Amino acid sequence: MPVHRPGPISARRLFLVGLLLTALSLLHLPASTADSSEKPGVSESAEATATPARGSARMGMGVVTHDGRGGLPTGTRAAAQAEGVDVASYQGNVSWSTLWNSGVRWAYTKASEGTYYTNPYFGQQYSGAYGVGMIRGAYHFATPDTTSGATQANYFVDHGGGWSQDGRTLPGVLDIEWNPYGDACFDKSQSAMVTWIRDFLNQYRARTGRNAVIYTATSWWTQCTGDYGGFASAHPLWIARYASTAGTLPAGWNTYAMWQYTSSGPTVGDHDRFNGGLDRVQELANG
Image 1 (cartoon, rainbow, N blue to C red):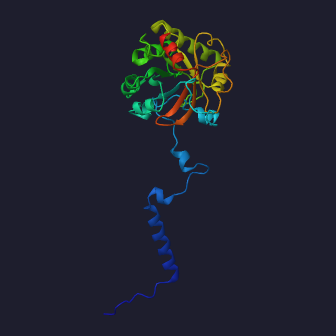
Image 2: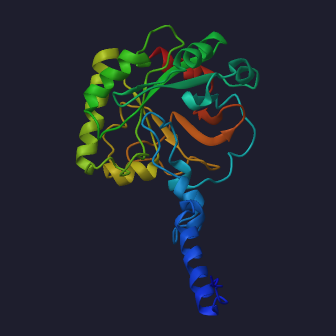
Image 3: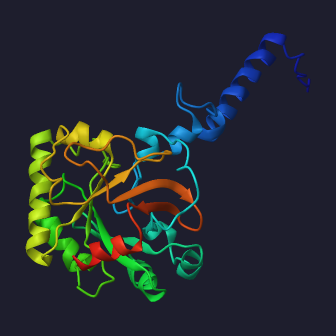
């Protein structure tokens, strides 16, 4: 019986087989291998940057982004300007003895944000400052787009933002600045923002008998309140500006009570100066 022997494979057939094998191998490549290039115009670091989680906001969070960072105040710390710090949960358990030994004499701790967050380190931070001898207080990060000013003032007082006449507890602070979660002015008109702030301040006073301190930056205040000057007569100003001077203040205030001058100071980053010595800090605590 004759045996059929296959002839030589043509070059065309070999070419077609090669194309088929290449196509099959591409179908099985992982997505990261098949397309390893970055999205056009978007860097890897930009893709990793996302809106921060609710509750993570802190005093001065938007200062560098919006106002930049300049030099430090000239000269060394002096008794004429008592040194302070502000802290939040991202700093964890704070070494208060280290800060005390470095000359820090007053501190503020973030207590709450909106009506959905309380600082899990508040106990260690707030009581720890008091324990080493500092004059301490609490602040509330405002989110005017979530609930009313009065509602947030109540939440603040109920979660650490109260005041006691013990000579070492400072009045609460309304931290009102750039919205890290969306529109800088929390989607409010200038008049609506002023109304929201007024509601918070009035309710805080009704609950504690004290006028809250207002923490803000001049550029934000101008943009989001229209540089409203009606709160200056009753509410101390805590100005945020990372530069060698506090700069121009918002309308109505001709001086500041406190100045957050850096976010890169020793131990905790955020450092502040009181516009006066320790006796002035005690005066504010006593009311």
